[in-house]
Length: 331
Image (cartoon, rainbow, N blue to C red; front, side):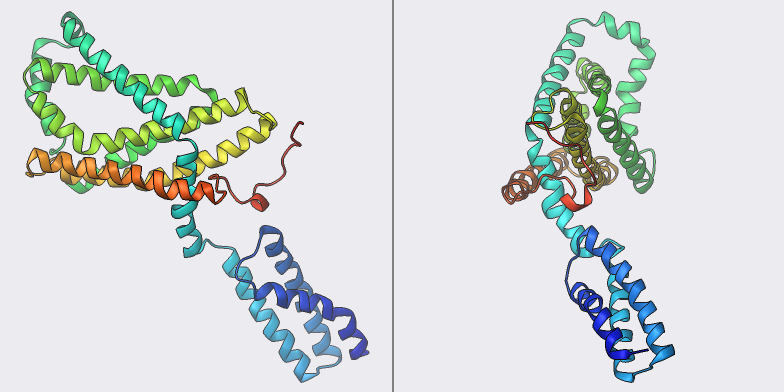
């Protein structure tokens, strides 16, 4: 082997690999390039060792392969930095960008819930067609209150967390169809209105609002966020704007998945409140205050970090180089 000629021919690839391994962050294409150059350089090292084992060159190539192997391993798993970026940029940006959708859903559900509750109070015969007097008495004076304390707080919090995460996931997953989201929301608010009307009619309004408010305020907000984001995906294919429908749905869908992942953690907080705060012996004002504090923290998070992230160009979607191929946009 003519070692000088071999080095001259292969050194551009080695320099390129060295350039990539010293970078702090790689795109998807660059990570693939590292793997390809790593394989080639390993072959080069084997050839040098067998034909012309020049110690200095062998040492350099061995060092380069070690760095490349470490870089490839790091690029293959999420870093703490990427996790922090998700919570400071991606998630809040997706929430802020879709704020008009989920705030509209929130207001609409509150209005519908108030109307339904008023209607049930004005039409007591409806209650009699749903439950017997004995069942109403059992619900109002026993079941509603003991629901929050009959199980261990930790297991109850976990069950609530998974149930709420499932409801939120349904709102996002069914979002592409539009109408199933409205059906899920209506059934949810209908149940709250019926139980609320029963409690108020039987002079248990303080128990109802005292138990449902601490966790219910932030919890329902999360459901409304999921529904609003899901409906935004639906609107992406109904009215894609300058984008193709496929691209619009893909972009809104990926942003919706960011919201779904972030809501898992927000709903965990709601579950902990429902499991440990709602049934606690704290005064009602303190328990409700904790729920309002959680709601305020969520809204401040969206309208500060989310607003700043959107101004920096974040959309809640994945980075452009990770989005894959897209259909051409129309003029």
